[in-house]
Length: 143
Image 1 (cartoon, rainbow, N blue to C red):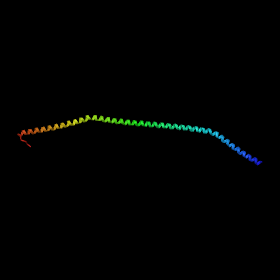
Image 2 (cartoon, rainbow, N blue to C red):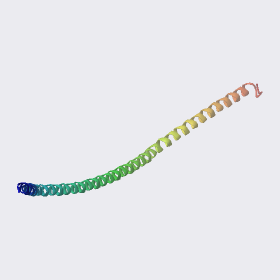
Image 3 (cartoon, rainbow, N blue to C red):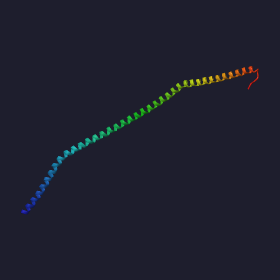
Image 4 (cartoon, rainbow, N blue to C red):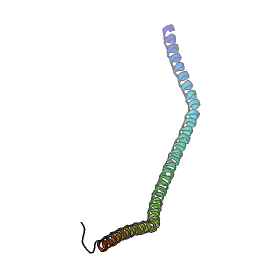
C-alpha cells in the first residue's frame, strides 16, 4: 500500500503543482491585462498624434506651395514693371534726344551754310581781283 500511497501522493503533488502553475499564470494574466490595456491606449494615443502630425505636415506643405505661388506672382509682376519702366525710360530718352539731334542738325546745317558762304565770298573776291587785273591790263587776259 505504501507504493500506492506514494504513487497517489505523487499524482496529487503533480496535480497540485499544475494547479499552482495555473494559479500563477492566471495571476500573471491579471497583472498583464492592465499593462496591455495601457499599451493599447498608448499606441492609440501615438497613432492619433501621428495622424495629427501628418495632417499638420500636409497643411504646412499646402501653405508653402501657396506662398511660393504668391512669391512667383510677385516676381513676375516685378519683372513686368521693370520692363515697363525700361520702355518708359527709352521713350523719354528718345523724346529728350530729339531736340538735341535737331539742334545738332541745325548746327551742322548752319556750319555748312557758313562754309558755302565763305567759299562764295572767296570766289567773289577772286572774280573781283581778276576783273581789276583785267582793267589794269587794258582788257587783256593774263594767265
